[in-house]
Image (cartoon, rainbow, N blue to C red; front, side, top):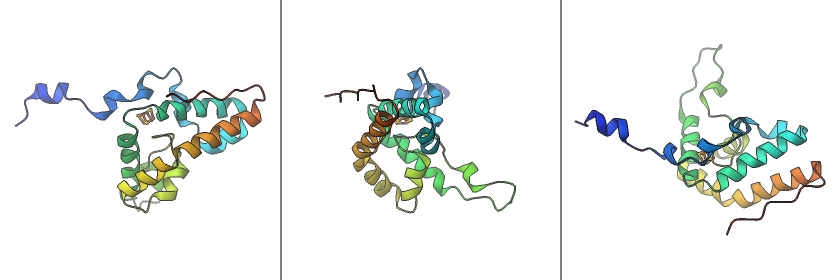
Length: 142
Ligand code: SF4
């Protein structure tokens, strides 16, 4: 049996989450649609995506978000299916990004979303540039 200290001090992937230190945690809950409409929101959403891009536990985070699609949806009509699924930005994906691959096995879904990450970031940078003419794209880390 695990000693309670093992449980108390055991680390999980969330301990290494880059968003834990984010100065703008609400930016992770700006979904694609609202960022399309509002210039400031699009810039904040890009900030969340760039945080995810450098996050060391992005794959774990994305897997966790995709797992919530496997939670059975209650049949009670007062509870909507969306209520059991992760919303917001997880692993540099939106709800819709995850929805598009939700029927795939999780490792395959993660691999697809990871392969598409540079394009998703590029689309967001482009969208911000259209709304903020003076915006200069961030220089990729490397
Ligand atoms: S991938 Fe993004 S949302 Fe997930 S833990 Fe890392 S910074 Fe947070």
